[in-house]
Length: 370
Image (cartoon, rainbow, N blue to C red):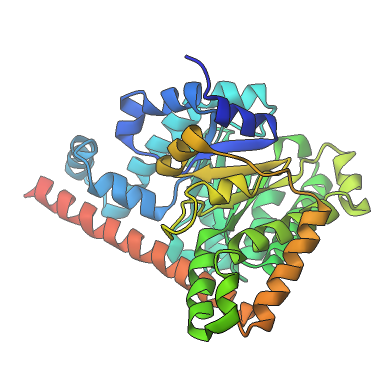
């Protein structure tokens, strides 16, 4: 099999392409392996919504659920077993990529229980538990970038566990995430950990920003309408400018000399939600070296078919992006409120999906015991 020329071009430009999906059928049919061989997929991200859709919408898990139910496992234990088994299998599939890239890629992410988004200590505890249960070095534990999540990120990095920081919406919060990562690296170094084995990505959500800001621009009307569809890309580009600054700083250079890796920005929520926009918008306009772009399969296939990437991001692009965000604010959009709303909604969406998954598995467990 040969790689698609468009996904290969992105890879060559410094974009690591990860798949934003995982299911047992994707693993069993060889589909994930095929995407690795033909679409340059070098990582996988999961979240509560992805697992809810996978487990609720297929029969692939029924036999395991029934057996676990007969063995007396409770619903939470059943869900943990199903999800960590899939993540472990995917991690094993990605092991060669992980080795070939010195740990940068070949990563599979699993998220802490979204109900813990505002509980620091329990997040730390579960992150360590999930890392142990999956038992593969190339797993990444996803921790939300809530106020309470920030100290958890530091603590988990300090333990030597790789972290995917999720639900980042604002540049300001992204700065705090990078700070938390550096704090964790410094603590890990003080404890004698091998910094070269610690990796992290910062998942910056893109399309949801456009969805929320576009709705507000439409309410304002007039000249503000010309700014629709620009906030998501501008916000991410501004974030990349901060990345360039932080990871060229004296503070990080001192850590790099001890083997530390940069925390790559990861563009998440890259499926286009507005049909008026190009379906590869959040890929083509966010080419950066280095970065990760995690894509749902629909976006991945659109990229493989007709992606037309823009020039790679630099400090100039970041400055232009900041000016665009200022224009949106000047038009009357309260950006701080936008980002607060998106964080709250992001946590709530994942909580809702998780509760729906619990409901589905509860019904299956009860049926198996009947």
